[in-house]
Image (cartoon, rainbow, N blue to C red; front, side):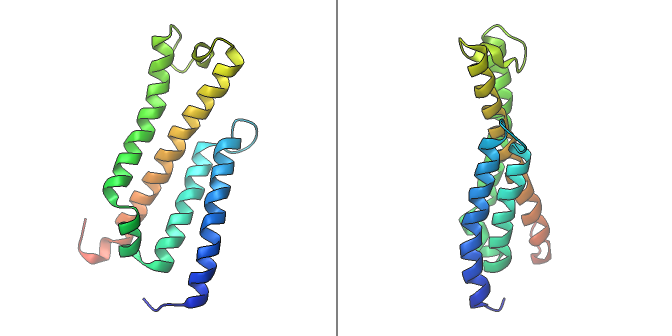
Length: 141
């Protein structure tokens, strides 16, 4: 891969901005448009841009595939764990009202946890898929 200085400088500026926007969408999702799915896709775009500019080997050193598999599982566990926690507190699966003494606080906490789990899972699965397709020409699976 030919090293293009301008592309690298612009990418180093854009990647943190994209990631910051992803976190804004993630944590603003319960108040407006957005949420875990959108934030996960946006965050994975930042890593995909990093991979396209700096190379697949560098990106896999920064974010190894085993870490991505762990994050995908952790996101699902956060989602399911929130539902199980509501059942253990006497409610139905994902009945957020029981998460706090005040139902409104429980709703906010539940939505934040669910959206966090979705965001982590979506971002890591998108990157797993991208890394598999990007690395398919190298003879690895």
